Image 1 (cartoon, rainbow, N blue to C red):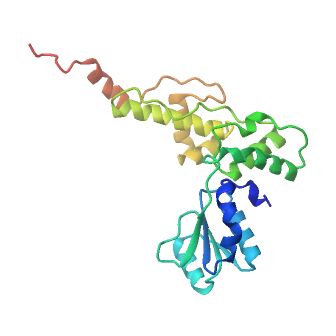
Image 2 (image 1 turned 30 degrees about the vertical axis):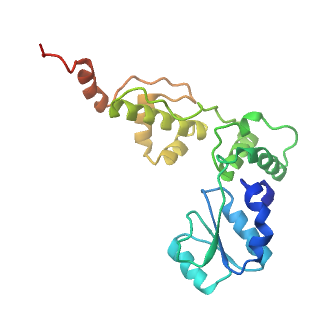
Image 3 (image 1 turned 120 degrees about the horizontal axis):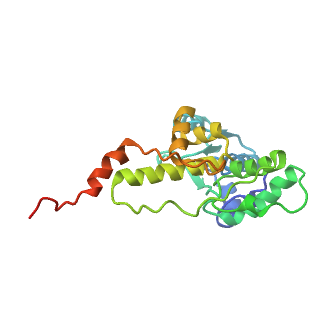
Length: 239
């Protein structure tokens, strides 16, 4: 298990850990998916010698807490205000990138990896959670794959019209998903929430930066409809 001191934001919430453990209320630990919420909840419950629950829904958690008034809940969302519990939000790695180095070192020990790790494994932008960070390390260990560097920050929307900006955002999200999936198109489609057929249409439109495939130059209808309007002057015909 990853030491609590390696989790994101420990410098803030860790200083009050003993006080938190001594409280009589139930504890509600929440945060982004894969940020270590379950790890922290299980550790807190073990120290308090009380049960814990990985909640699938707020309703499930509320029902469970009614019969476990000092238990610990692990959830993705904050606790409803009517529940008698103390909430602890665990931030993601994107909020505390300083935690990446220690976490990678801990994962390397678990995987019996020796020697220095490639710096790109801990490069920003970070996937944002422990699960993705471990996945980076495993891909490198088992497959020799390293993550492709991503452009810093979101795209700059230079156009004024919605159609052009949506086109640029679509390209950015597609390329980001392909890079984070190491070029695995099934995984990229899952990340984007689209079918494989839709993914191939997007790749034809925008290209694949991982495999080096250029865009075919096809433009969506919303752009093609927009182009004649962009070429006409609003003052045309006025004398």
